[in-house]
Structure formats: structure tokens, C-alpha cells
Length: 203
Length: 153
Image 1 (tube, one colour):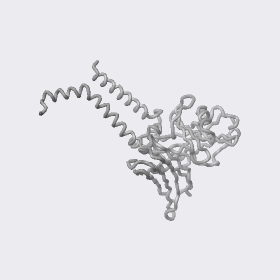
Image 2: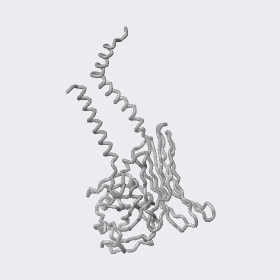
Image 3: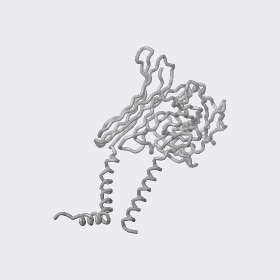
Image 4: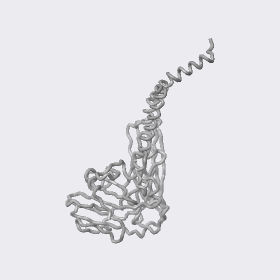
């Protein structure tokens, strides 16, 4: 092979490697049902929406639950919760199930996030909140960013971590599960939160 | 002496076979060195934030609004930043995207701000939230800002 051909082939290989790398870096972390993208991959021309994922603060809707027992909804909605509640977070467990009939005034073309449930665990001066949200068909299609950086939970689930949020619960991890968005927030260090997030189950 | 057609062809062959690849390599490296500081022109400092407000405009006419901002300084004159602000309304079980606004700015130091708002007439007491998405020439990807929930009377 001539020197000229070797250089040409080398250039082609470099271009292919660079192109593949760029494509992988920009690849959306989509579940197929929810168009979630990594914040690192968002482009200048196409910013992704940033939705709120927690119900507004209110103690009115929270109903006390038995410490470590499975939390069940009053209807057939999905409820994300800790699979094994640590004893020091089981001192007070409560659940909030918003009235979903308010959804009736909305159309599929509206961009909204329905909060199905919020489970609150308290103990030893700390609080952990696990919420289940479902994006509307329009919101599920729209590119969305659910955190400041992507991480991988110990079970291999791709999730998004945000620290320093305003309010009493500054650390947050979000991950998709089917057509649902699961959120866990706490004042615990994010390393502890990552372990708890990997233990979340949906009933 | 004027170059003959033969000598020109010989020169082209020489360049194409021996020198062209070297010239290309040098050009690519030089271009990379020049464009690298431009493409990654990191501003010395930047910050993002989102917040919301509710104000009485006229009797019975309220405005729920948000403000998302990307501020930076110590950058290059050709730096630029973009902010998209999203205003969300809570209806009891849903966060509904109520309005969106976009803002951009450029310069060594500047603020890209977006201020979405929604008119409210005779509102019930409801919660709102403002979030922001920010992109810029001096960081990669998207930075987000999260406001606290705020209550309109």
C-alpha cells in the first residue's frame, strides 16, 4: 500500500471514530416512552424542558401509613416507594394521593406532568420523599431534562442527579420507569440517596 | 522563465504525492489550535437561577410570572448565552406548562433572561413554579435552574 493510501485510510478511520463518538455522546437516553435526554447532550439550538416533579408543599393530603408495610393507593394508580424501608426512616411514613379528576380539564396536546403519589419517610432528623409522575402524551414526546448530570444506579438504571435544590430537600435523583417518572428527594447526602433510589419499587 | 505545462504538472504531482498530506496535517493542527480557545471560550464565572412572583395588575387581574437568568462575566466578546424560562401551574394533581419565554445575550459579560407570565382573572389559590434551561458558548450541554413553588392568592 502506498504512503498516500495509508494516510487516506488513516484519515477515514479518524473521521469514523470521531463521528461515532459524537453520535454516541449526543444520543438521547430515551426509554422509548419518554423522551428524556442527558443534560450533557442538550444542544444550544434545542433546549429541553425542565419540569417540576414534586407536588407543592402541603401537609393536608398526607395520610400516615404503617412503618415498613407496602403502601397501597386507594385506586389502581402506580405508587413508587422504598422496597425496604430502613428502620431510621420508618419513624413516620405518610402518603399523599392527589385527586386525579382534575386531569379531566386537560387535553393530550397539553404539556403537563401528573403527580400520582408522594410517599414521605421521616426519621433521625431526615426526610426522604418518593414521588411518581406521569407525563402527558405531549410532554412525553417533548425532549426533557430531569437533572443536572447523568449517573448510573448500582442496579444499572440510568438516572439524573441534581444537588443544591431550593428548599429543605436539596438532593434529587430522577429516573424513568416505563411511562412513569420516579423522583426521590432528600436532605441526605446524594451517595445515600443513590442507594435508596436503587431500592425503589413500583406497585 | 515562465513555467511550462510539463513543469506545472510535475509540481502538482510532487505536491499531491509528498507534500499535500503534510500540508493538510499542518493545516488541520493549526486550525485546531486556533479554534480550540474560541470553541471552548470558558467564561471566568457564570450562574443560573429561576424565581417566580405573583402581582395584582388591576382589580381582579393578577399576573403570575417567572424570571430565569443566565449571568456571566470574564468571558470573550464573542461569547453568547441563551435562557428558556418555563412557567408551570399546579391544578391539584398536575404541573401544567402555562407559558414559555426565551432570551439571549452576548458579550464578555452579560445576562440572558427570560420572563414568561400568565394572566389570571379571579383565581383560586394555586401554586406556580418557574424553571429554566440555559445553554451557552462557554459551557457544554444544558444547565438547569429550579425555582421554589410560589402561591398566588
